[in-house]
Length: 75
Image (cartoon, rainbow, N blue to C red):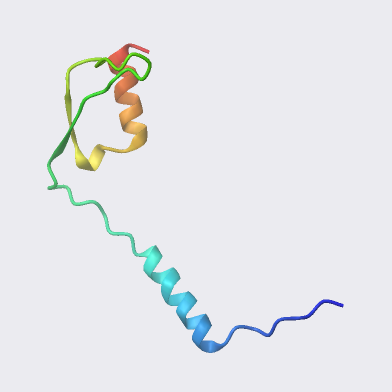
């Protein structure tokens, strides 16, 4: 027979609930952070693929950077 563990105490439940609540409170990225200067390099040769590009921080997501690079390369 398997041993049945007792349910968590009230203190443990409140700590878990507080931690979950803190993780859900995601601050939005402020729009006044400026921009990031990005320079793409070819991974195989190590040479730059084009001129540096200034990207606003609010738009600097992985998906947007991938789209930008594919557009610059003409893919």
